[in-house]
Length: 216
Figure 1 (tube, helix red, strand yellow):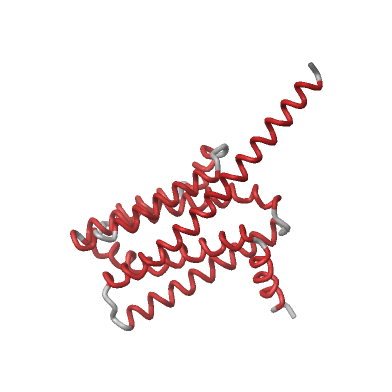
Figure 2 (tube, rainbow, N blue to C red):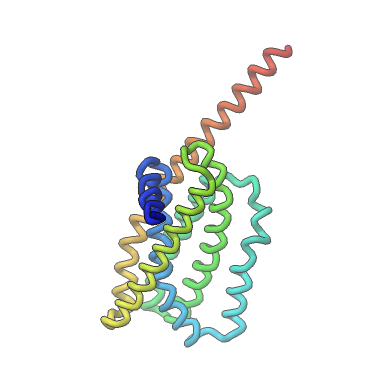
């Protein structure tokens, strides 16, 4: 039965600490954004003019264009930037008490930058799959599965919160707690990426040194 493919996904995730951490981080961060997304979309239509909505959409569409600019960036720096961005997002929730319109602009800008960062990270993460037992096709399938699952659960959560008439401020508090755990997961990934790149650089330098000694 084709349902056994789902068992394969769970098996592969549990086989690798790296893949498990990455899957969990993607799950939490995507869930948070897609739980909040319907509320932000509603605020967009209420407080933002059409040209500003279009502006953010255009900025978000630049991910494929600007990716070549980050071709040689270290992946751990991308994760460090993501952590900083998540901290800023948590801090921005306080703006809801100050100005709903300002909150809408700031959170939409953060979502836009996060989307670009997410795509840049996806491209660079592929390089590290050669250190894992899983193939590239399987990795991309697992990643897509996790993202779809997070979006669905996030959307259902937003529907439930709206049905129960839970205030947005309470939802922001709930998402803050999840975001803190998501940041912890991203920090662990940051450490893994940094260590692997450091060891790789040491190996390259050692190979260069041996080559130099050989032809001296």
